[in-house]
Length: 187
Image (cartoon, rainbow, N blue to C red):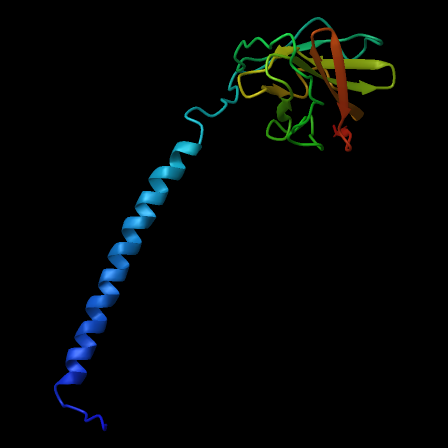
């Protein structure tokens, strides 16, 4: 059987293709919206808040040797861990800038994060020779995180190379993790 081309059918076919294309777009849009509404529930309702509080150094100066100082900051929730919880090795961004300058207020600002088991305490220590400075020990929030916002100079970290180590403690057990890059403080 031989097919014959009818003059009016090309426009009819073109119209049908346009209608089909629009229908596909509408149906695709419907499924995209439905998928978006399902996946947005996976994202936690509350994200961890970083501290915006300036930090204050307690009790020591750069001239003191073998001394520890604490830096205080706000921003973690008080959370308790179960007695059978397994302590996780601390991890995270222990310092936001490994090359701060004491003469620059912009680069001297640091943010630190320690992630471990929910309800554990975490602290970050900075060691240069026999001198140690530390960020205040804080309890992790419901996500297992602790946040600090602090200033290098206020924390008493003088010019030089400081080794960075995070310590997590839970139920009498302590684990530590060192940053692979030292904090290099310049004048």
